[in-house]
Image (cartoon, rainbow, N blue to C red; front, side):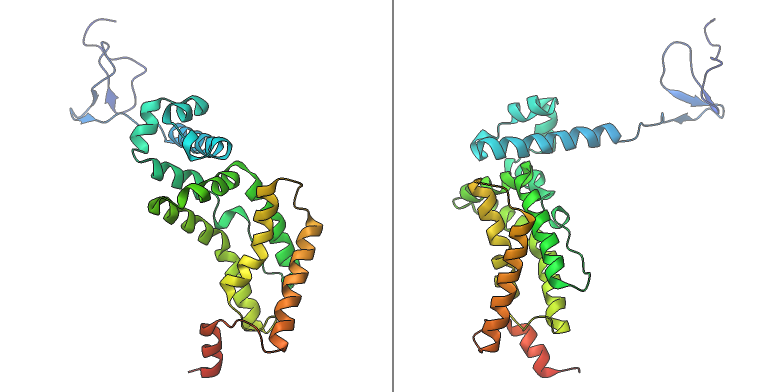
Length: 243
């Protein structure tokens, strides 16, 4: 093609010179930025990196989280890992972020026991996946690292937020006595963590039934005897009544 002529394949409204792709010059003489590709590939690379980081933490603990190993496992460039996560705690936080409220959804069917059974079963599956095992490994390392401790606390809080909300609704409906919701949530979720961390056997749906039944029965029985640990906010709200 002679110099100066335009290609018939040029983008509409944009004249491209035959020698080179840039700049893109519109017919009005103004330069225009070339169309950018959507960020789908970037999102996929980011997901692979976070999954690789979670897998390494789950397998080798925090000490095994080396950027070169993350890049190799994710089939990504090491500079990409450094550029997006210059701080290792930030990489740990993002790798564990998926293990939050969405890891074990808790629905409100109107049957508290049935909802808790579904939740505990889903929580056990989520705790056994790479993000869940990584979280359990990070707990030990976080004792000596305040920043890491904050990350772990945030992930645990997100994980149990939906549980506390469902329990609060049950108290408001009269399905449960007013109790310390944080303690009750820990009593329900604690056995799941114990089963997964020990790894002796899988936490089953039958286990979820037993845990829910025993904990709920215990809370109701102790409340009937006046020994329940009360959630102050809920009790004060009930005493005050509508304003």
